[in-house]
Amino acid sequence: MKYLTTLEVARELSVSKQTLLNWLYAKKVPEPPRNRNDYRLWSPARVSLIRQLIREGRLHRRTVVHREPIDDPVVLLEVAREVSQFLKDADIPIRRFVRELNQVHRRRRRRPTTGRLAAAAVTPRGRRA
Image 1: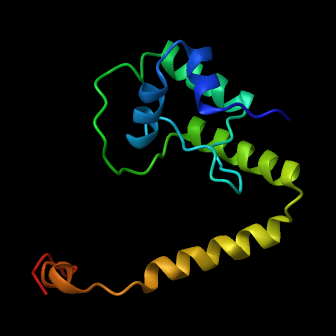
Image 2: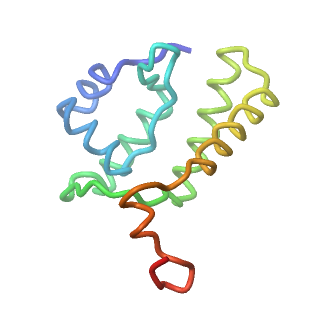
């Protein structure tokens, strides 16, 4: 499978590269997988998904960068397909991928909160710690 660069995708969609990146940062489009050099790997399926979102008018509204999970079933299904294809293309066993993903998740949970952030931490009941 041939992957496209961010600039190639932007040109194909007739938007600027910065607009495409803004949509990524705002979580309006799912982040594509990256290669070992940290370049985004845009598959034709992901480009067609973005084209569909543009047709539906879901991307050209004002973009506000925020951190909300993407729970749109169409997007999640496309991301799952793309990850599967990426693993096949890279010849990465699914078990190894899941194991490494779990390790990353564990490392993120272990990071201790220190300094000013610790003072501002909120308990589950909404009271300050």
